[in-house]
Length: 366
Image 1 (cartoon, rainbow, N blue to C red):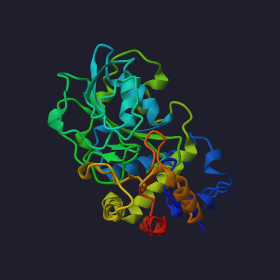
Image 2: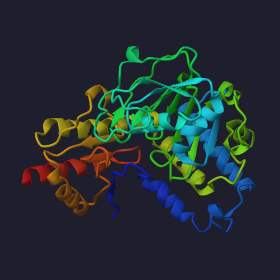
Image 3: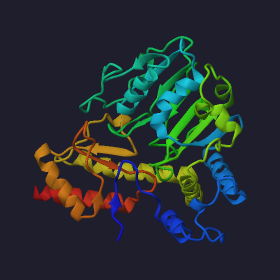
Image 4: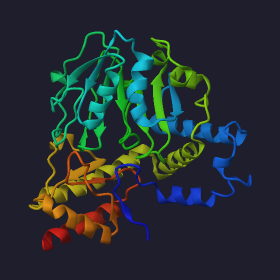
């Protein structure tokens, strides 16, 4: 029996995708070898790559004036690579910080561009990180202190550690750059509202090791400084994301996930399921006098649900019991504490119901 996986990332993958990858592991499409054993230049793999891009474009309704890239390095690499590609050293990047990942993005960018902290409810300097659950809301847009003629505005629409999510995106003069690692494909968005979207795969797309980027052509053309080709988005676009050997297996599995989402009814259907899962878990937490969630209701994440027991001395017993109930990955981030249930696309309502049942049982016996 598979466990109920609430890990924050690497995270749960759809069981149907895992089974297909397993079935094709030794003999993929009759070639007598695994997909990870064939050249990325092979026509069969190029077909996989092109199908993955086509399916993602369909799922997200990506406009024709945006390129889709499949890159190595994960989202953290993009904290530096974004300013390298779309801002000159003398330009300013505005950063709206709603949690730890936004903090890290701003810190990394500070050596490459002028960083303006447009909003930060935690009031932490760029060279420091929050060590408590400081981030519990999204600041109102009219309080953002944006820079005139900023090269871009960076946001993190969903903060996995703090469980804070932006549920609407404002219209701004500067291009919006969004780290969507933990909420891409979880709900429908208008890609045209963004200049650049990047997302590490290991939450809603596939295994770790690959990153999806959606970048508007005018930003791709900026190239404001001389950088090595391997860091240059335009060079990757020119080479079909194969400037170097890509993480072929992760790309293949991502393609299977895209097809799985389409088979479920697309992003609209996935969004309904995600809303239902989150609503059921938050509803139980709010009705309980044992558990609490500290995030403002308007900013609660549908992907990551942090919650706390009456005192931290109960945490170890809760986690031990969770292991026995086949509930994995519930320990909260070390900087926040408590518990965290990550309920990404592949996590089923059945798993959420099992968690709620265990939480009720633990509270009754504590």
